[in-house]
Each structure stands twice: as C-alpha cells, then as structure tokens.
Image (cartoon, rainbow, N blue to C red; front, top):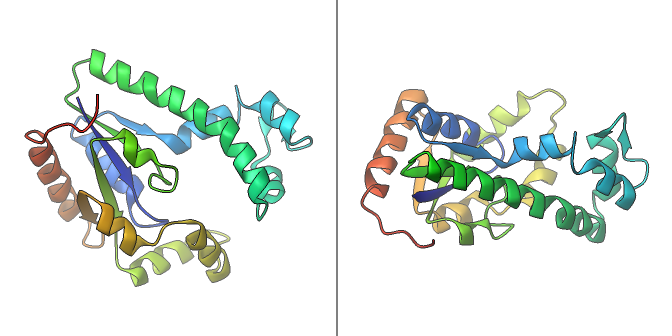
Length: 199
C-alpha cells in the first residue's frame, strides 16, 4: 500500500483535496479530527493533569488550552508530547485497517506534516496550494479571522514556497473543483507505478 502525506498551509484547499481523494475511493486519515476526538476522550485526563483548569465537562476547552500554550514553547512541546503519540497510534491503526481492506493507496491528512517530521512516515507528499492572495481572501472570509491572526498562524507554519519545494506532488486549488479533481486523479495514476519509500 502506498501512503501519501497530504499537507498545505491554512486555507490552501487541503480539506477539499482530501475530500477529492476520498471521492476516488482512497481512505483518508484526518489528523485534526483525531485530535478533536482525543480532546473529548482519551487525552482529557492527561491534559487536565498537565494543564489544570483547561478541561470542563469531560472535554478539553480548546480556547483555554490554546491561551495556556500560546507563546509558551515548553508548554506547547509538553502538549505535543501528549497528543502526537496518540495521533500516531490512531494513524497506525488506520493504515493497518486500510491495508487489510485491500487499499492500494491511503492518504494521511496532516496539517503540520513537515513541521512534525511526518514526511518521514510517508511514501510521497502532496501539498495543496494556491496563490497567497487567494489564501488571504479565503482566510478572511472565516468568522473571527483577522490579518493579525492569519499572520500568527502563518508564522507557525513552514512557508508555502518551501512546502512546494519539498513536495512530490502539488495540487493547485485556485482553479476550482474540477481542475483539482483532475490533478488528484493524475497523482493517483502516477503513484500506481511509483516505488514505496517505506514499509
């Protein structure tokens, strides 16, 4: 089974690209949704122990936790040390299930793929991208989003230009769904004959 890592900066169309892979019958693992589940389940007591007062009613209060770790690198590292292994466990189970079901390709949708070294666990990397002005326009349509918040988010992420340089495949999402779907199908055609880096 060929494992594709999918990433992309905020509002670059990563989720759209993930859904296009899913439409083609490819199993997609969404790291963000796993974190959401952990924040309502297994991770709650561990996070409460590490960061008292950041959970309520058996769930992590993302706003409280966010303000607790924002700008505090040691706290952020501590949180990552709790959450990342749990996400990787879920990822490993997902890959085993996909392989058992006979999938030839699987996609790991990981927002901070390069930043967390996730690119070392996949056979090839797909980066969803769009011109910076498209990205800004999309982000600023989101509720509560400001240029300042966007700049803070981008400061934590590897620049799009560097992601593109490191990518095996690029999906430009600025020309609409049909165009992106064509690009996704082309990637699937190519990986069918590519050697695997891992496993």
